[in-house]
Length: 322
Ligand code: PMP
Image (tube, rainbow, N blue to C red):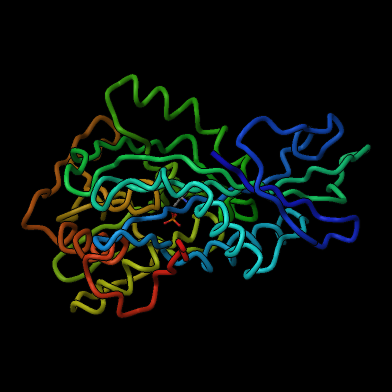
């Protein structure tokens, strides 16, 4: 019903935002977002607990990430407190759209973009934070079936020194074509490799990738070409707590093809098991189902996010609904 809009002043400070009815926003034709794609986005979810209360998962992590992205793209960003407060306001204004416990979540999409006017190729003097929401029903029980990924070793997603490590709006459209072509061939998504050697596993277009081999769980290191996912960070911590050796390290496609299990993590997908990976026309199957490490980690993180399990880490942040 409502969205939140906060514009910076000419000094880059964010004085005050407003809840406004959801609708179109005026865009200056001279803005840096329209001309040069100067913009970031975030993705979060509000979950309903069994007792009906509503909670966010690690929102301050999103605030820190958008601030890092803003630094990279020469934008000013609201403070962590301003950001979290803005997210809470917009969730409170859309509470009736938070699905019942176990029936999905309210997806929250914050955007931060160069809204101020620029003449030459340069960053905007003013930025806008805009937050809107969307109910989604990736129901907690009926988990979608396992993903079938295609490895594309010709079109990387990110380059060393580029913006793959932040949620730059412009990271996403360059891979629309390759993902669409993969989907037309029946794949769920594309798994991207590094841009230099075309050999090391990086991530999927909207989630991080993990492999499981015996007691060792590995995911590619966040060194600027993959997005440091908040789900990824949480899964590494949870895996260690239940006795797995969880590592951030480079691993090759060949190593992935030898893994027991492969899974992906992200706010939108949660944890999704990967059933098959296809590379150079070779299709390899991985273990899926109830008796997997993936399932164990899925139950743990979903339990914390939806309020079924105790939140020992203090990851959840309540929305005051009174
Ligand atoms: N990688 C990419 C490219 C993404 O867009 C996302 C979604 N934000 C992720 C990974 C997962 O990050 P998170 O767990 O913070 O949602």
